[in-house]
Image (cartoon, rainbow, N blue to C red):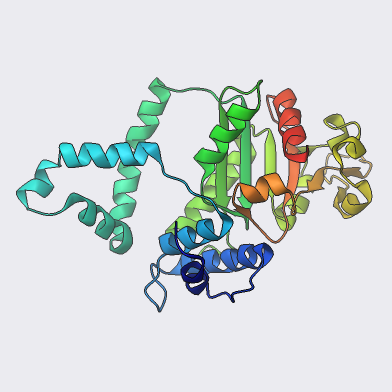
Length: 290
């Protein structure tokens, strides 16, 4: 694990930086690195992420990635072998410097993986969408943790769609498109979104009232008065008058989510109107608030 002094240096934070300072700084740096591969000091987003994890005490090794690296070493790509090029370095070079080529490669990989996923598909029984100006580094790790801790959940799915104010790159456009698809047909059980997206979607009927899932907020230690600003009136233009209702819960300071590495200035948890597993959605809410 990286030394604290080095991690603070990479994040440009003082020695007395608090966890809150670190999380806020990470959010700023993530936005910054959306527009560049390296900063003026030569650090990459990977360096930033490692520094953040070190300061948070998170140590993670992706076993699948390590397995793939071992397989590449034992069975090198014949093209790279013929050219006498180190495969790992070549792949890193493509990742950091050849974005257009990577985009084409990603499209091909996406098509292949889509076909494979349709053949070997395991339907999730809890779908969580983390979207807006919210950053999360390890969605798969978080999904696995939830699946292990909730008895009723066999396969949790967690997605993170980071959205910028303006779409300036192909990645930004792709994220916006993916977000639109997820809202229209994703059938997500849980949304963890920023304040702006919450009010926009709540008015459009994307969420179900909190009271349908949690009868007693106080029993979970939730102060309803602190969430009064999240009471929304739906505006569906269907000639029906809707009463104001609470569609979300502020989880900005939720320890379970913060420990999972989810970063945002404000996070709102909401229950998807089209969610297919309401019992598991309730179980997840109880898990993070217990």
